[in-house]
Image (cartoon, rainbow, N blue to C red; front, top):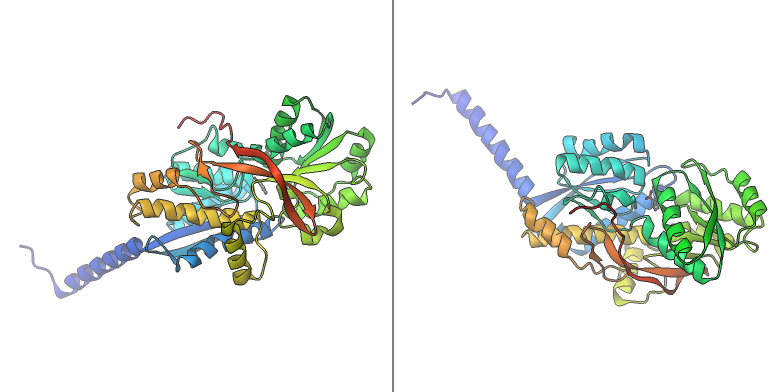
Length: 389
Ligand code: BEZ
């Protein structure tokens, strides 16, 4: 047998101790990478998602399936060109077990690429990019929010039911806006309506005056729009200030008025939007969630907070199915696929493509709330075009 010197034995035992400490840490802790916008037009949305996620973890006593949760954070600035680099900071540098993010569809496309290439588990708590649970669907990618198609298609049906024959659309020129318009058009035109003009401004521009003048001149029966966050606040105010609100009905995917009503004031009053969450659902789960959120953050929750809360619920379902062992990948993924999430929006399950199958509500802005009017589309599943899973 080889002779070891005292110093080489010490070095060896230190290395073994370090390795076993690392293993103990990895087995009793789950590393969660939050990649969200904390600056820019979607900053408030990112904060609401983080709040929602952390609220669920807090309600479980700070652990999921017996595992402590350690958070790592990156501000993605809603900047698609940095999407891959930012996701890699969490995956390669911080070695997270799971990525949670993001808000912006273009940034989420970069995250999805990193998740696919590295096989890292990804749960998307907002970004609606259709392709992520469509042609680019993958076993390790899940979403707790929506596809851009879902609320938009439902609004197309509503606008046609309201006997509008022509509509002009206006949005940001990037994946979410374009897909939202496409979804609206599909629903509206299937029921006999016609989209006569599609207008857009670059993301995150809020210079709407020229396009509002075009809408006034075109005189359509209705206008459909996708804007969110600070951009939605400005658009709704500008639409009213241009004198269009009482002349041409404005409809939108519900992001137009979610989390924005205090800032929009009277300009938003009476607007109709479609979304998978609403005020006045009046279910025990929604009541307890709202109470708990308001107590913890001194704020009212919005759809983004719900989606973050549900991302934590989904991770918990997977971990529970895997007995808390993150290395049991198959069980973890099966647990998430089969989960019935008791969401404040109403319970939902996932489609084969890992996107929520959910009710889309028609809401009306009244007294600074998005009051539920009716269910515009019951148990609506995204068509998941091109997904082979
Ligand atoms: C998106 O980019 O997918 C998105 C952003 C804000 C609200 C809804 C969707």
